[in-house]
Structures are given as C-alpha cells and as structure tokens.
Length: 244
Image (cartoon, rainbow, N blue to C red; front, side):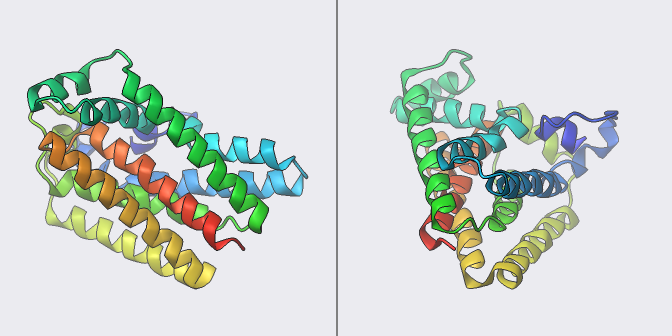
C-alpha cells in the first residue's frame, strides 16, 4: 500500500486494505530505502558508464522526482504558492487547495531545480561518493511520517487525517527506531561525513516544516511534501560540500 501510494515504481499487484491504513506512514521510510537504493545504484551506474558530468547530474537530480511520481514536488509547489502569498490564513488555505499553478510555485520550482542540479553536479565532481543518497531518502521520510503523526493536522487535510487513524505510540516508536538506525548506519558506513549529510536532512526538513506549519497553522500532505523536498535538497548540498 505504501509503495502504491508514495512511489511510481510499477508493481505486479497492488492490494489495498483499509484496515492496514495505520501502517502506511510507518512503512514510508521503507519506501525511501527502495528509492534511495535505486538513486544510489543509478549514480554508480552512470559514473561507471562514463556519462558526461552534466548529463549524469541532470539525471540524478531529477530521478527522485520521477520515482515518486512528482508527488512531493506537487506539495512543494502548492505550499510555496500558499506561504509566499503573504495573505490572510483563509486565503492561504484556499490557495493551498487551488489546482491552478501560481507564480510563486513556478519561481520556487526553478530555484529548487537550479540548486538540486548544482548540488548533484558538485557531488559528482568532488568525488563520486553516493552512498548517503540512501540515507537521505530514508531520513526525509522518517521526518515526514513523524511530523504528520505527531502534530496538529489541518481540518481540511484528508491526507493527514486519513493516515492518523488508529495509529498508536508503537507506530511512532517504530519510526524513531528506523530514524536512529539510519543515522547509525550513515555513521558506520560513511563515517562522520555521512552523519553530517543525514543530520542536514533533518535540520532542513525541520526548518522548512516549521516555517510552513507555523504559517498555515497545521500539517497536511502538501506541507509534509514541501519539507521533504527541502530536507533532501539540504542533504544533497551537504553531500556536495563534503565531497569525497
């Protein structure tokens, strides 16, 4: 169910059981592990094949968006339109649900793509060290799941309210354990630099989420997607800065 909802990777079958709805967010980081593994594998393959650095960087910058069916990117654009409008709260919430694309979302998507491409380009140029890509995808989804389960949802947010149903403390503990394991593995497998990348994802997610959450007075799928995209970008920037 989590794979079918949160990624665009074709599945041989897709079962849906409403009784398991409360397991979708706890399994969200596992979807991230699959996306991160494909991201890392694609990076290694492109470098091994000797792809031009610009082409390699463009492919790796865009790949996570394609793997998720642009789901989180849609939330990033909608939330950008809402919070940057600087209008009263009721107008921001209306803009958040408006299916039309506004000027702020277009501007912010251009800014995102420039920084995403530049960060990946620098990472490839610095040392071709891509293992932290796996942890970036896992940790951003741990943070997203925890924020949706823990904080106040917007009343009109079907996403947040739907996935919070029948969730218990055990689900939150499970997510915290996955987050702790991801941080530990990033340190063990990639050293202190891997941990820096992982922590950068957390800080990037937290900063973006708190900005949108405070401005919109609640959490929704769009807000979580907005923060996830920015958190992953911060991880890529950290990866570019530390090099190989």
